[in-house]
Image 1 (tube, helix red, strand yellow):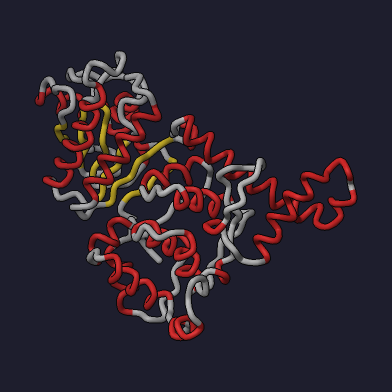
Image 2 (cartoon, rainbow, N blue to C red; image 1 turned 180 degrees about the vertical axis):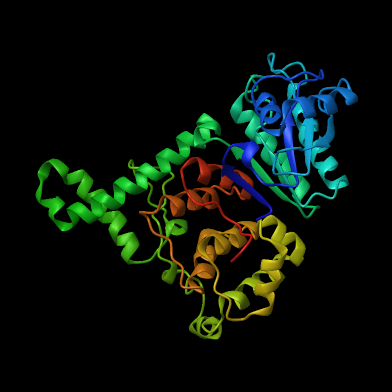
Length: 365
């Protein structure tokens, strides 16, 4: 896929270019800088680096990669965090822009970044991630390149506390509700101490059975003012449509439905596959095959790119016999993003990675 977050040691990653968070002086620094020098061959790399001299903050220069599994090392000098009022954020943005521009000039097909400035430089990890995703995402809308963001583990990625809190609450509320329905069912009403819980669950259960869907939910109760029950994919294609319309659409394959939605969106193919984080070759294969059956991560990526609402998303997925489940953390996180109108695929992938889920988009399908 064009952009991917991976768990690895950046010195072991195979890419055309490896980005190093470099010291501005031609000396070996700490953190990622030290690790890259050690893996590449400190003496040879340092001699090459000394030929370049000082590098201003935000700028990038290239050297050979020596013993690394790469052609180039892009030495990029990140900002040292002071208090956020000394241009740190803009400097970090320039780091990504200049490193990506240099990789493009060198005709790199792939480039691997660490989460720059978030280590010994002290840049807040959640803001460092936000800037990385924003700059990489903007670059990939106009360039063909595989970009990797390399972290040791999910703990290295820190999301905003507000976003994590909202997603945790969304997941917990759906889990509690569905466990309650499955575990207690009709019997819960026999317990007087759980009378209110029974009424609440019964309302939710009727909603699910009647296939009303969260968008039609008008009765808000104290259980959650903004929580929507996970709908069934099969219920949505018929909502608001005549029988004639339903029968007319019944034979659409995933591929046919997808390209009808693309036509209706007004976007061209290139914009769609880039926004979906889909490899161009995969998209071409989809275009040529009416019987194409996508992986779930690919189908969801198109829904995000096209900014589909949840009913339309579930309808599209159902064309490939793919469904959402209220017991799936992946499905709940995707549903959270869609229902909250957040269609930033790179932020969604960062959240999926953080929660140990497979990211969306694809290079091979």
